[in-house]
Length: 314
Image 1 (cartoon, rainbow, N blue to C red):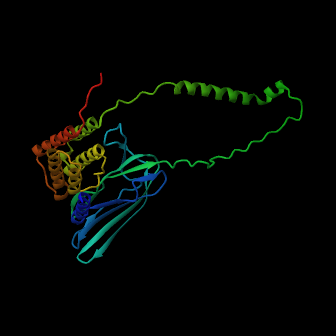
Image 2: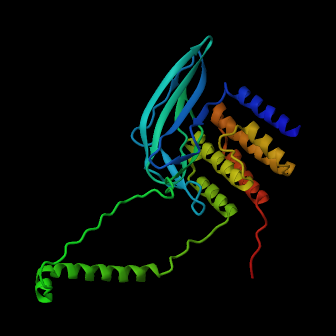
Image 3: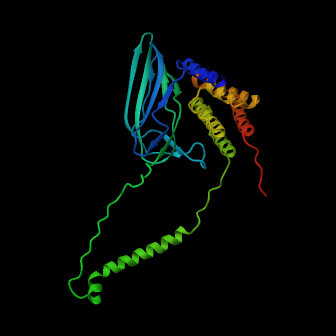
């Protein structure tokens, strides 16, 4: 019964927020290198509303992250834009704007497609980030990759070593160089690689929040600043509790966290943070310096309270 109520609430929340927030769709969460990934953006508009959207050209803005990197990750320049199209569908007193991208990844990794900006009646906002996994196509057992045909030509006269060496000395030199290369390669391969310092999810998230705070971006572009803060906190909660919150609304996020029976104080703090962030992203609010500092401290507190207790090994 509880699962049924949760499902109905999630569907209802999606319907209620569809007219206020843009929708983001992706054809698959896992894509093979060289395969086509389709991304679609939608937003419902009134008859008098006008949307301005400038699609990226050439390559889609994207970062690649890993378990031992910071949450921002490194720039990924191998997500090629194959095609782009957009359209507006009229339906009575409203209209639906839709944009479609066809993308091709040319390398592997955990990819975060960056939030694209758009302007709605001169008010700037951002679409949601997208998390996908790009991998190579696994080899199939029994399928031959290369066919090698061997042949030999017998000597028609008695083998003379001096004549052979004078004529084919370069083959002997080639074998010597190949042998030298193998020896050098094995020596280098035996050297143990330097293991990068391992940090916990808690340390990684706190570092990301501190880096965002150090940029002072909230002074010039609060929407972009709080979009990044929301992504950091949602990424942490998704990783910590093994659920995907990157594409959930605030209502859906709090509903899912309550279903996990988390501490009520923790849920209240998370709800207050996302409420303030949504006010900036969707209602064009401007937060003063004191509110900014409070949100940063609340975000750190959420990470510290919800993280497992760290113990030192003697």
